[in-house]
Length: 430
Image (cartoon, rainbow, N blue to C red; front, side, top):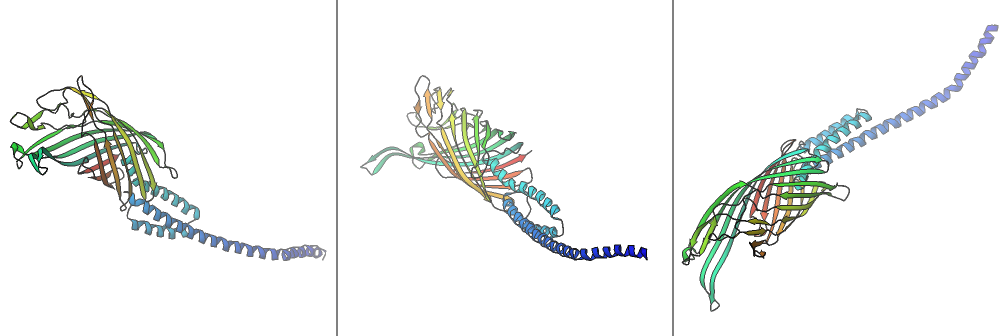
C-alpha cells in the first residue's frame, strides 16, 4: 500500500504532464501541416516559374540562334523547353537549376557564333586564336567613253571623227589570309593575293571610219600586293558603347606595277601618231607602298548586329624607269597616288537558324594622283580622282563548328566602282 501510494503520485504527475502537453502537440502538428502546405504551394509556384523562365530562355536562345550555324531547328527548342519544364516538376530545385545554368551557358556560346562571324568580317575576333581564310573574288568592270575630235559647223553640224572607247575588264582574285590572336586585345593579319585579269579594249573610228571598231584583248596574272595589318581593341562592348577596334596596316608593292609596261601599238594615223595602243600585260598591283589606319565599330542589338568603319589610306611616292604611256618614248620619274578615305556602315540580322544576312554601304574616295618627270615638278593627273561606292549584300552560313561560308555581292553605284563583285570566303578556325 505504501508502495502504491509512492507510485501513484508519480503516475498521476506523468499523466498530468501528458495531459498538459497534449494540447501544444496538437497545435504544433497543425502548424507543421500548414507550413508543409505552404511549402508545397511554394514548390509548385517555383516549379511553374522556373518552367516559364526556361521557356522564355529557350525562346530567346532560339531567336539568337537564328544567326548561329550550330543550333538545331527552332521547333526543337520549344519542344525541349516544354519537356524539360515538365521534368523539372519531379526533380529537386537545386538539381534543375544547375542543369539549366549549364545548358544556358552552352546555348549562350552557340548563340554567339553569329556575332563572332560578323565581327570576323568587319574587324577582328580576338577570342579566336588562329584563323585561315581562303577567298575568291570576281569583279566586272565596264566603262564607255565618247570621244569627239573635230569642231561644230554652224553650231549644229559636227565635222571630224567620232569614236567610242570601251574598256571591259574581268578580274579574279584569290586571297589567302591568316589571322593570329596574339592577345585578348591584339590580332595580326597577313593577306597574300594572287590576281588574274582579262581586259578588252575597244576603240571606234578605226581607220578614220566612224563605224569601224578596233578591238584588242590582253591578259595578266601574278602575285598581288601583300598586306600586313594589326587590329587592337580599344573598347569592349558595354551598354550603349559599341566594340571599337583600331586597325593599322601596310601594303607592299609586290605585284606588277602599272608603270613601265610594254605597249602594243594597234593603229597609227598618217602622221605616224599612235591612235590606239594597249599594254601587253595587265598589272597586278598599285606599284607603291601604302599605309592605312582605320576604326571599326560593332554593336549587338539582338537580333541585329550594327557595324560601321572609317579609315584613310596614304600612298608613298616611288620612282619608276618609265611613267609615260607613250610607247615611243621613255620618261623616268616619280608617281604619287592620291590619298583615299573609305567608310561604310551596315546591319546584319537573322535569315534562318544557320544563316545570317548582312546589308551594307561602302565608299572609297580617292584624290588625284601626281607625277613628276625626272628633274621636273609635281603635276596632278587629270581624271585620276575616283569615287567608288557600292551596295553590298552578304550571306554567312556556318558549315560546322570550325568552318563558315561567307558570300558577298557588291553592286557598283558610281562609274568608278566595278559593275559588280562576287566574293566567296571560307574562314577556318583552328
